Length: 350
Ligand code: CP
Picture 1 (cartoon, rainbow, N blue to C red):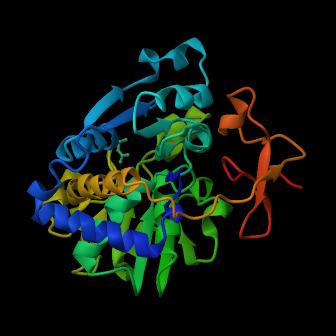
Picture 2 (picture 1 turned 90 degrees about the vertical axis):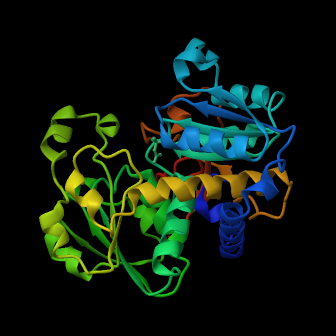
């Protein structure tokens, strides 16, 4: 069964195809009004969301399909202790496709391994958020004309920023992409997200800004910090305002997955280089294209990564294996040669 848990589950050619379909949907919406007639999409959201859940639900309605919506954990049997694995098995009997967001890293993979219908990861903790990346890619395609020869600055919470992790893995497959990671030392990118990429790191937004073709701002995410004093210390690390935008190139675009708190001042919204509301617009069409592709039953996706039994349990407290009983401790060999937890990619040793 074809699922999308990581952006790398889609090939570059498939992303091109999704972009072409999304652009056709924008031009010819009537042609898709019945495309998913009689099909049901279940949105299982165990973490808050405005954009992603409503974007998926709007996407399914525009394709002529139906939506089964579970907007929070409290209204589901997860609150009674039901596992993600059992939830996925149950919903497979009720819906044709599942969209899941969960605070634990690897939860979407657990759902996919147990479902008998396609599963789309709508965000698993601080790990991945591939459909935000699809929204980001169509925005970049429209604003920059493609994905080559770009210097991309990513600013804010790069440690727990799932949108950043997915965007880096997607863009790393194109020619001449250089990343600039702008974050406090405590929130720099995890090692697993640095595979095969050209990058530099800095703490200073003002120093990086003049070099960038794209500035991707992110929120410092209070909900990811175990130490709330650390959050209080770091929360105002970066605030982009109209004055700082004077340092940016005339054609540098500013992106943000949203929601924002204060990291982009509202005076930037009037700047024509601000693209964060365009990302929401394009996101719905990319999700429509993805739903259609998965419901059309393509099974030609990337082969499932070979998993082996891990000799010890994953020690990442944010991993789904620490929350859900009965999950086998599995690992895989990362591209960096290290042995990593299959679910969350934390290093687990041999
Ligand atoms: N960008 C994004 O994931 O927004 P929501 O949390 O509102 O879904």
